[in-house]
Each structure stands twice: as C-alpha cells, then as structure tokens.
Image (cartoon, rainbow, N blue to C red):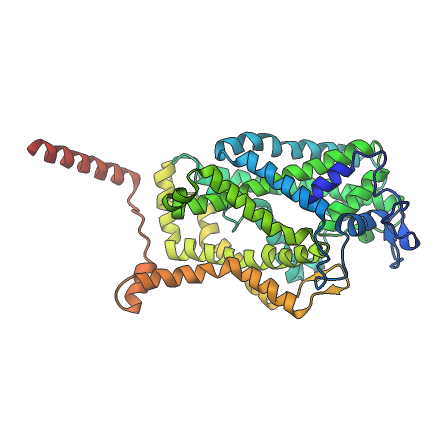
Length: 461
C-alpha cells in the first residue's frame, strides 16, 4: 500500500517521473527509455525509478541504509486510512468494502477494453492462453499456483473464518463457498487478460519477445505496468486510476488481516482485554499500531530484501503448513461426518457429494502433496536473478515462518498437558470433539423437553 500511495501521488505531476532518463536519480549511462531486452547492462527508466527513487535500494540485506522518510509518512497514512475505515467494526468495514471491492472490477474491465485495442495485445493474450505442458511437471509451478489461490481467497489466513463468523446461523455457507471460489478464479482470468495484453503491447513497441517482458513479483506492478502506461494514450488518466485500484486491493486485504487479529483477541481474551483498553476501538488502534511498527523494516533502503524474504517464507512455506494442519484438524480429527451433521443443522440438508469428496479426499491429498513437494523441492529465497541471501538471513526467514506455525504444536501440547489421566487418556480427550452432533430435530426435541422439565420444576416449587 505504501508503494501504491507513492506511485499514486507521483502520477499527478506535469510528466510521469518514470517516463524518461532525464531525472536526478537516473544513471544516464545505463538507462533505457524502453525495456533493454538482452542488453543486461541497461535498465529501463521505470526500473531505475523503482530501484533508485522509490526504494533507494542498497546492495543487500546486510546494508539497511536507514529509513526512507517519505515512505515512512506514507506507511503511517496507509495505516490511518485502515484504522478509520474499520475502527467501528464489521458494519463500518462493510460500507467501505462496497466501494473498495467493486471499484477494482470497473478498472479491470476498463483496462481490458483499452488494452485489447493496443497493437501487440493479441500476442500477449496468446502467450497467456497457450499452455506449456512441460511446466506442469515442475513442482514449483503447483506450489506457486497453490500460494496464489491461498493468498487471493485468504485460505489459511483466518480471514474467511473470521468474516464468516458474523453470518447468521442458517446462512447458506455452501453456496457462498462455491460462489467465492468461482468469482476468485474468474477474476484471476480477467486479470490475466489485462496483464498479458499490456505485456504484449510492450513487447510490440520495443520489438522484444513476450518472454523478455513478462515477470513476476513487485516488478510486474511497479515496473512493467508504469512503463506501459507511459506509452499508452491518455497515460495521465490510466496511471492514477491504476494505482488507486491497487490501493483499494491493499485496503481490502488489510481490513481482513486486522479483523482476524481483533477477532482472535476478542474471542480468546475479550473480558481481560477490555479491562485494559476499555473500548474495542482502542484495541483496533493497538493492532494497527503494531502493524505499522512491523512495516518499518520494509521501508528502509534495504527493505525490498526484507520484503522478498518474508514473501518467500510466509506467503508459501507458512501457508502450506497452516493449511496442512487445518485440513488435518477438520477432516480427520473433527471428521467429515460431523461437518455434514453441522451443515444439516444449519441448512436443513446434507452437503452434496461434491463437497463431501473434496473434504474427505481431494483437499487432504492436494495439500499433503503440495506440502511434501515444496519441502523436497525447497529453494532458498532470491531477489532478482543474481542476489542470494546470506545464511543468517535464511535462518531469519525460517524463524519468521515458524512464528506463525509453532503455535499449533504448542497449543496441542498445552491441551494435552491440562487434561487429566495417563498420556493416552489425555490424548484421547484432546482429540475428542465436544460439539453436540445430534440432528436439528433431535436438538429441538431436547430443548423442548428441557423447557418442559424446567417449567414443571418451577411449578412444583
């Protein structure tokens, strides 16, 4: 969000600052106004703006280089926006999300209509659509695909569970699950057309293969697309709208993350926390303040290396482990039969065969397979094509990854320790669900009998 704000404000000048090599931050001797292709000693003007102006990046993570105060102010502004959008709870967040969730769709369709009319767009779209079957044999492709789905939907983050907890008891959760999954996949496909049509256009005007333009990570959003906007018709309109769209997407993600933290704290320690903070708004402020402090290392001059390190170890490694433990707990320990009974109690009918097969077989097999493959095919974090992290940074990355994972075995150990009896008895109690699984009609009958007995008891008194 901080980077998006920086680009957004820089889009309103007399000229787009990443458009030329005639700026104070440019190294004219190796600056190119387009993509340099195979000329490895050259950098595009947009790449130099990202590296030398926005980041003022150092040579490695070993050199922090001090805080970028412009980015520090924008980071504070980003968290202030987040706080004032969500401090009143889910009701105020819902009103904001009506705009922040729908505006990106309008922008995607507007960009799609604009991009497909550009020369070379067809080549980019064909590159996007034509499968490379040999890539399907690479484990890393499947790991990255899983990470993409996990991040876009919010699997293993807790955001979907937290938001769903505010639904009515009889809300059709199966329908919502199916619709969210379809909408997410459709959005990804539309975004693919938007991105690769622009990449095809850039490849056309610079007379380069699409392969040389296509990239991943922050470079796609903050290098390739700004360069594309600088050559498009009405570039001064598209650039601010695009970065405003990124800001909306970032806000939606942060709303969910903060809500997860606040919901967990309130559910686990609500009374104790409110004794300290008095009001929930102050708890939200505390969570946002912690998020702001944790973001400071990313806006130092060496912050891009911290960002890439955390992205590698938290967006892929941690997610796979968290998803594995979630699937293990829900499908094997709690059990698919219990899930079906709970859904029947909520909706009045059992889940169909598709959901039962997914829960019982497909989800565990896929998650376990991806987890094992990602461990076997593990590759250390890198930045760009040449920078490799020192050993201490790799250890730090694993430590950051373990911060989110370690609580699961610690929680299991605590649950076994607090139970009584032998180890096997404690383990059995810890693995036994405590949810009443009687069908809804049995529960209603049980409640009626309990009510009648209570009335009879009070009459005899």
